[in-house]
Length: 115
Image (cartoon, rainbow, N blue to C red; front, side):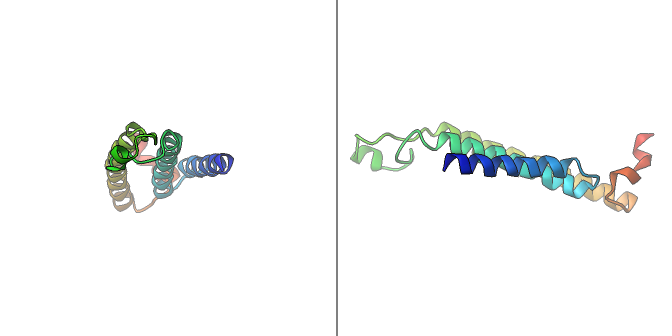
């Protein structure tokens, strides 16, 4: 199962890199978000197997023989999701300005940005 998840997350990150390298700015923005989600899923997957029960339940006091999962990866990924969403909103705002001002989404046709 771990190999399958590693292959899927590697493929997801690879598709994100492929989309970032495209000429279309909208696809580049989607690829950036896809890469961020792949990294977040990897962090959740790596931190998920430290314990048997979630750290925020009251089941930990009832069964002390079960190991409680580490809450740090969950907190880090939640923070990364919020920051990534803010960055993605900024990138989408820039895409809207670029496409409305220059009437194209192709980065090869945006020659006025070089000056």
